[in-house]
Length: 182
Ligand SMILES: CC(C)(COP(=O)(O)OP(=O)(O)OC[C@H]1O[C@@H](n2cnc3c(N)ncnc32)[C@H](O)[C@@H]1OP(=O)(O)O)[C@@H](O)C(=O)NCCC(=O)NCCS
Image (tube, rainbow, N blue to C red):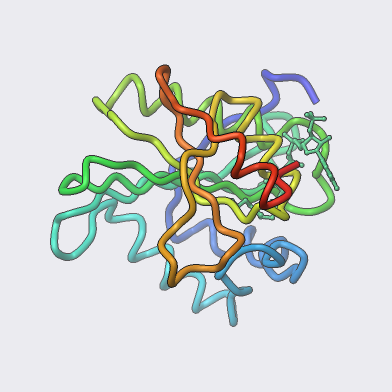
């Protein structure tokens, strides 16, 4: 798929209908805490909360984009960034619908999102929390310059590893060896 074919469209509640089927695939949730939406209406309500772009307490900005094909107009997945102003930290996430896997869509869409974030926000720490068994996600993060820096808190899944995008990142090779990062 050509780079020009992808676009990021800011999420709004009208996307619920076209996202529902793709998001209903259990394969998307093998390595994450999320679960499939219960209904189009429930998804619309979730999107309505997200589209305001800010948490009720004002601590976080919620930025969400639908990944779309410019040619077909189809929704291919989504990317998101949660900017936590108190912690000075931005956590990203990405999902591509299964039938589009392995076409470089996640890498390209996340690169596009990082470019938007660089343009509009002065972010110091950009991280992704990745289950070390989720090899495709690890490949995406690494290709974009993320490196493993630590495990998540002891309460979290033992497989969760924090990947950070930093020019001076400190790569901890032992994390990869001990947790089978691909
Ligand atoms: C992770 C995810 C977004 C990747 O989407 P994608 O569009 O297929 O990603 P890309 O095509 O850009 O890159 C996939 C990479 O994984 C590699 N890959 C795919 N399957 C793999 C496997 N079983 N083992 C190892 N590597 C694998 C591909 O070869 C490619 O890497 P390469 O280009 O270095 O060869 C997609 O699998 C997904 O939505 N998963 C469910 C949600 C999820 O886990 N999101 C991440 C949460 S942290």
